[in-house]
Length: 228
Image (tube, rainbow, N blue to C red; front, side, top):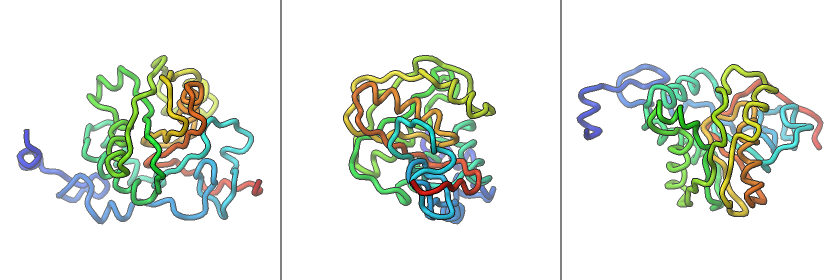
């Protein structure tokens, strides 16, 4: 069914504010909380001043070189991500990519995406991380490679503690041969456990450097440690 006809039959409302119109209105898109201030160089956690490592990533062995995110995961972003992932509002991937490409620079490396659990993909009918990666690939004019796969389904990450999240995704991914430098794309960075497990698989498959890009990042307040 054509998009215009579908909009007539099922009028849209902006997910963050609820006003009639598009799935996310211009005002709400502009108001999303961009992560532009001082941040940790490694994991993108907001900090009082720029640091190389913060409390979230100091002392951890991370397989990715750095993670970058476009917006903080506040209530408005949470509603948008929930509608995108759980309610099937697929056009929100384009809105997320627009914001991400506006905030983050890209140097031309190929993109890969965190693969879905097969059961969840069947339930949703599509995969948000892949949709975001392909939208970003179009904007940045770079290829999107499907080199990662799930080795196991595992439990949902939502609601798990940090140690449980790390254990839940340990060994969860497999990768076919990877280019030497890739950018791993996912929708939300919560603790970095999923990104780290996926980056580990890419490193085993030949990647020398893996960077991570997500639309949103969970923020737990300032996480400053001494500059390393």
